[in-house]
Length: 105
Image (cartoon, rainbow, N blue to C red):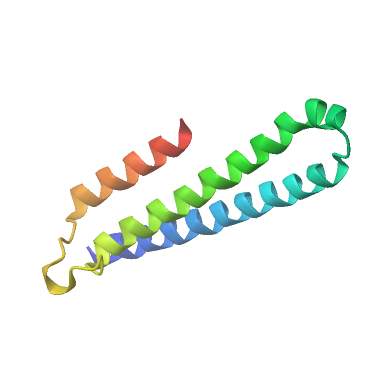
C-alpha cells in the first residue's frame, strides 16, 4: 500500500506541476495578445483568443485546486483534523479518475 501511495503522490505532484506550467503559459500568451490589442478592431479580431487564454488559465488553476483537495482528503488534513475522512484506495482512485475526466472534457 505504501508503494501505491508513493506512486499516487508522485503522479499528483506531476499533474500539479504540469497544470502550473500550462496555466503560466496561457497567462503569458494572454499578456502578449493583450499588448497587441490597441483598437476596437484589434479586439474584435484578437479578443476571442485572449479570452480563450484566460479561460485555459482558469481551468488549470481549478485543476490545481481540485488536486489539492484530493491530497487533503488523502492526508486527512481537510480541515477536520483527526475526524476528517480519509479515502481508502478505491475511493482515492475514483476521485482521481473523476478529476482527470473532468479536466479532459
